[in-house]
Structure formats: C-alpha cells, structure tokens
Length: 399
Ligand code: SAH
Ligand code: SF4
Image 1 (cartoon, helix red, strand yellow):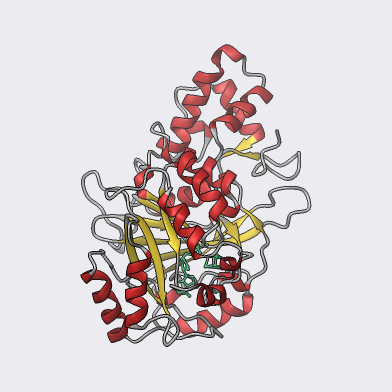
Image 2 (cartoon, protein in one colour):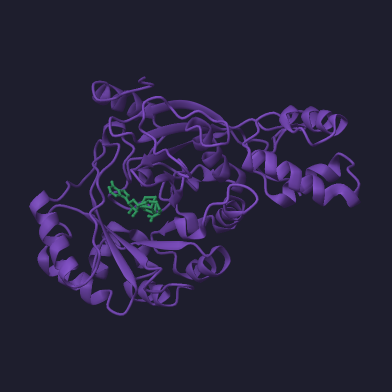
C-alpha cells in the first residue's frame, strides 16, 4: 500500500495528519514496531493526532522517546499550507489550501474550504475534488477542469486546518475577532457539509474513509448526523453512501422537470429525476427524524415560478424531505441572476404551506466569494479580480 497522501518522493517525510488507522498501522510496521504493541501505538498516535491536535511528535508524552525520534525522522504531522485566509464581515472564513503532490508527477492542488459560524453551531464546508467534471451551468466550480480527486487524508486535513485556526483543539486559542461560537461544551466545528468543490459521490471511497476518521469516537468524534453529503444525483452510489457512511444526504434538485434539469445539471441526462427520487426513497436511514435535504437554487426567470413550487411539493410527496432554497450566488461571467426576494418568499411560502420546512439559505461570505458555487481556486485571474472587487468589504485578520 502506498497511501496516496503520503509524500510523492521517498526522501520526503510521510504525512500522518489525516491518515486512517490502517495507514498509521502501516507506518508503524515500516518502522519495525512489533506486532504485539502495534494496536496500542496506533491508539496512542490516534489520540494525539485527532483528539489533541498534536503537530509535533515530541508532544506525545506517553510514547517513549526512541519511537518518537524514529517517527519524526520519517513522518510529519504538518498540515497542508494555508495560502490565504479571508474573513468575511459576517464571520465566514475561507481558506485556500495547497495540497502537496499526492504522487510522483502530481503538481499538487489548491482547494478551498469555508467555515460558517452560527450562534449554536459551526459548519465547515469541505471539498472532495479539485474542480468538478459535472459542469452544472450555474456553478463556478464546474467551469474549472477537474485536476484530481482528493485523498481521504486531504479531506480530513481540511478539518484539522480549520480546527487549528479556530483554536478548536484542547489548549487552542480562538481567534480574537469573536466571530466563532464559543462557550461550555461548544465546538467551533460541529458540523461538516460536503458542499465545497467537487462531486463527493465521484470520489466515494476517499469520502467514506475520511468520514470514518472524522466520526471516530477516540478522535475528532463528529456525529454522523452532523455530516451532510451533497450530491448532484449520482444515483448508483447513493445506496452505498447511506449504507457505508450513515451520513445525512442532500440532493441538488434545482428543477422539477427533466428538460430544465438537463440544462442546469447535465448529469440529469444520465440519471433523470424519477430514478433519482426513487434512490432517495430507498436511502438507508431516511426518516422523518432524518430527512433528506433537497437543494433548490433560485434562478431568476428560470425555475422560480409558483407553479414550479407546487410541482416541487408534488414531486417530493412521500419522501421525508427538507427543502433548502438557495439564493443563486453570482460569479464573474455567470449566465444567471438570483431571483428577486419577493419571488423567493412566494416560492418558500408555497413550500412551507405544504408542510415542508423551507429555510432559505442565507448567503454567507458573499464578499469573499465563499458562498455556494462560488468556489474556484485555480484561476489567478479570478483571484486578482475578486480581491479588487472585495477589497473594501474584506476584513482579514481583524483584531
Ligand atoms: N457537487 C455536489 C456538492 C457541491 S455543490 C452537488 O452539486 O450537490 C453544493 C451546493 O451548491 C449544490 O446544491 C449546488 O447545486 C449549489 N451551488 C452550486 N453553484 C451555486 C451557485 N452559484 N449559487 C448557489 N448555489 C450553488
Ligand atoms: Fe459539480 Fe456540484 Fe458544481 Fe455541479 S454543482 S458542477 S456537481 S460542484
């Protein structure tokens, strides 16, 4: 096994921050740790890396010095580099993270990860791929060519970076801007949504391994019910997601008929609305207490009439559902506009009167292009332009 997140060159230290238990065990085998003590050592390392957030082997006080020295000689607990950190006026934080090369010939990759604080929770929006192959016509990420899948370790590393930055490990110090939920027993990162770059169900093996690390009770201990995986509708993988990950499901529906959905979400040509909804009906664990979220982006003059709201309600009949109306977030050159506020309200009222909770997702971090579908890291041009556009509203590292 050559874990993909390990260093691309033999001489470079191998990264253990983000590793699965199996990968840590393999590292110990390679160091010659005898089998009889291996499980214990894995547990110790696991605790330090994921419960305590250790960034140096030397911090691991219950592990003997010679083993720590051997670990430090070949391995590192370094996180991927944070290239930029932007803090929106509303507390939303966006990190541009540079992943080191995952294998020989790989140039490394930049991805974005967004943190959204609310009074009672902190949600981290993670990426599963660099770019996306699916080209939804309203999504910025879809306009960048796929560079590659992220490894499980790279997905987990996004959470480690966020917790480091938010002072969310024991002994950590929260940022002084006060824009992070805090208090007795409150975790800065309490929820994870796979709604950043990429289609998680096109990278399900890595997403599943990452979720196993995130939910492990001896480490990061996140609840599966507080992890939501959003898909544009990769029907054949949905059953596996539910069975193997046990997380909450969100489905990007966005249209109530196939001809419009074909245009908005081209994957619909392969997996149209009917089989998609059928897969939702059979999603493992879905119930009134664990509803499936249907995301619906509000596009002016495209999918926002009262008739479509009623069609949406009819379509979802019999499925334990929540409907999440997302005001369209424009990006430079985007071909759509966001529906008017009154139109969104009317739409939401119809859905609400039909008995569905229909929170309108408040756009967060718009001033730093951190809102849904605005993520796109590769374009220097965009970054320069966005910076120019946003200079005024951006609050970076404010005390
Ligand atoms: N690929 C997955 C997850 C990432 S996208 C998916 O499509 O579900 C996360 C959510 O943001 C999806 O519901 C997506 O449709 C939505 N989205 C994409 N671009 C958007 C934009 N410009 N404005 C608002 N929502 C957008
Ligand atoms: Fe990919 Fe999701 Fe964007 Fe569609 S909405 S292009 S599936 S990231």
